[in-house]
Length: 190
Image (tube, rainbow, N blue to C red; front, side):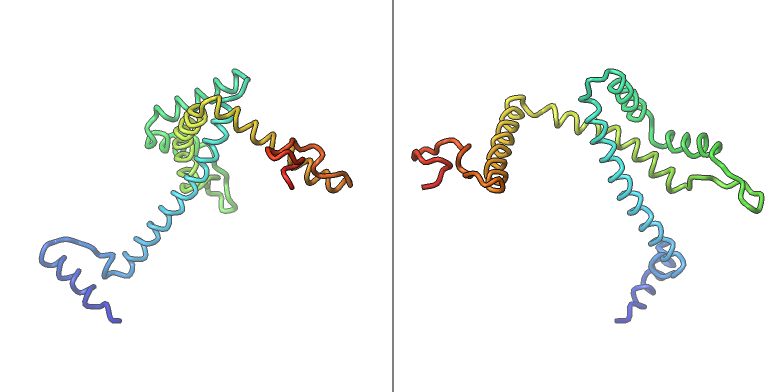
């Protein structure tokens, strides 16, 4: 399939209207565009994973009994949620990045952390602060009665599992520890 007429149409569009979409007919611009697109997708994926991990850990720490941990987490949340991400990027890249340099074999100072890694760190910390609050609110929204009922179900299932699986391996009758079923038989069988 020949798509040259499509590329030619974009050239004519540029010549007649001034709309410059060179990514469609210039191979160099197309390669740069797709490289930028793939970099953006990588950045989004890494930031998503890192920010969710930060959110889970932070929500867990928010439920901690240690006041110092809760206070540090709250300070982190307030700092990163109330600072614009562009300011954070500037701070991480120019302020911290300026101090984190090494001298290579040629005698030139090179950064220890790349631009892309600084972007991942900064945007993950920013989004992680929001995720902590989202996950914490989701956890606190579950009524205490529902949590208690869930623990009871898990305990009953674990108990039944121990009696059935562990009881069979020890040579004892699997139905010994189970309560009577509604039809009067032990272990629910007939």
